[in-house]
Length: 449
Ligand SMILES: Cc1ncc(COP(=O)(O)O)c(C=O)c1O
Image (cartoon, rainbow, N blue to C red; front, top):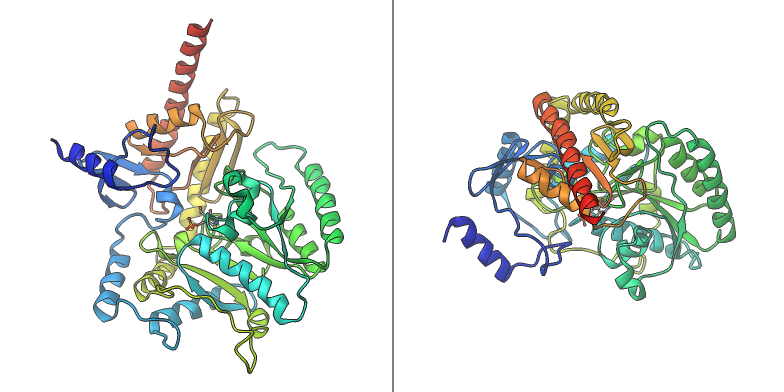
């Protein structure tokens, strides 16, 4: 039995993969090592990781500087409980974030992943109103198409993406707002936003005393299909929320740490949310950790002489020192390696591809923002699973590219260390993959006729 067969046999017997139907899914690829932009399977084949392994590895894989920070921290202290104790790496990280984030977004609450960062924000918003004696403010607003993670609260505010119908009975009530995705040459976006804003305002007015908060994926709905929107739209919605005393949660789990061209997307929009949720790029793909940063005025509402108003939430691995040390080093690398300039360069390269794809039968709604490049292969929106998308995913992998379409959307979100040649390889690969898809579908059309 070869090494690959051996690993696959054991994987199939003992592991349970996420978002996977094990009855029908093809064998997973066994990755043995990773360096820079590339993954290497057990047989030594190279795969260019064009989606930064679920949008996490912003500096590429096995970055020497981060490896060193991790080693240094491991030799000093691997973990300490975070109630009644603290440690230098957590303090440094919190201080750095407070220095970069706008206004009084200063209070860092640590948890373990993007979903828990959202759970924490929802619980904090809910309890904020209770602590202030406004118990009736307990409902949330979220967008249609939004995805905020897979835990119960995150699924509740993410039910607009349609992935969670199975769990409907478990979820709490959330009012869904219209979202206005946009793309290149979208001529009537302003009118669509105007119409949506009118509906949103009505909903805010109708429920104005019962809404605790609004949760937003700023500028990009990720898992819902890489749907970009204009900063003006998000700014208008958040201004409206503010006018009705609704707390604003920015879920920047996907778009934080440079993805859209600024370190945090709230900076691009010019809004200071009440909470910002961060994960993925926070630890550059090394370790699971997340952060919910709250404004000082939110924190103050939890202060009291008694224990009743305290936030009773915590995880065993809260503020794990290894993860904090990595996050600190990752932030330093933004400066040292001028990463935002790299993202701007990636955006320029992405924009050059628009002309190559325009008019292609399998490229609709082409869109670019920072390091994000996306288009839809069909003109309708489709679901999470889609035969053409599966074909493309496998085609890309067999041609050394990790490009994993999300439903109908083919997209790139490369690590920021990507080279020009690697980008060209990916763009050319996309065009060749689409040609293969066209060929497959014209053959099946002929067979059907
Ligand atoms: C915007 C957003 N929020 C939350 C999450 C959940 O993060 P995690 O998978 O780390 O729980 C994701 C994951 O893709 C996301 O894109």
